[in-house]
Amino acid sequence: MDAHSPGTDIRRELVALLPQIRRFAMTLTSDAGRVDELVASACEQAIQKSHQWHGERRLEPRLFALLRALSRDDPRKRKAGEADARPEKPAAREKARHSIMDTLTKDNAAIFLLCVVEGLSYLEAAAVMGIAPEIIADSMVSARRELAAAAAAAAERRA
Image (cartoon, rainbow, N blue to C red; front, side, top):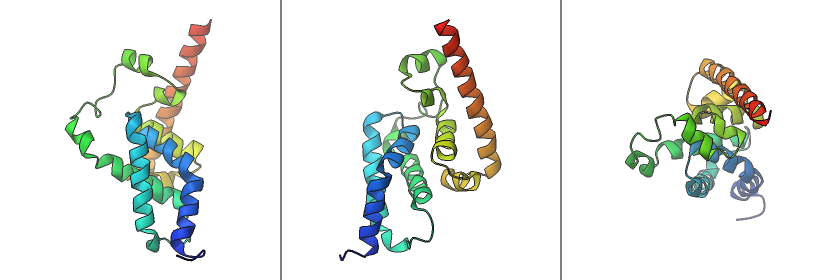
C-alpha cells in the first residue's frame, strides 16, 4: 500500500479515534474485558471495508454504528440470556458505579455520549443507534434527568 491509499488513511484516522471508539464501546457492554475485543473487531471490519469509505463523511458515526451492530450481534450476550436486557437494581448499580455515566441506563448512556461528548447531531445519533430522532430527544431528556438525580444524591451524601 502506498502512503496515499484509502487503507492507510483510514488506519491513521482509526488510531486518532481510538479513545472515542473505546469510550463508546464501554457504554455498550458491561464487561470491561469485552470492550477491547469489540474495539478490535470494529477496527478490523472498518479496515476491511475501507474501500467503501471515500472521506466524504465523518468516519465516527460509521464506526459507532459498526460498534453498535457488533455489540448487538455478540453471541456471548445472547448466551447470557436476558440478564443484560433487564435494568439493574439500584443497589447493584450503586456498588458497581465507577463514573457518572454508570448512573445512566445503557441506551441513555450511549445516546448521551454520542450527542454531548462526541458532538453528533440527533439525526446522526439516531442513525448510529438505529432508532428515530424523536427517541434520541426523549433519551436525552431522560439522561439529563438521571444525571441531575445522581448529582443531587451525591450532594446529599456529602452533606
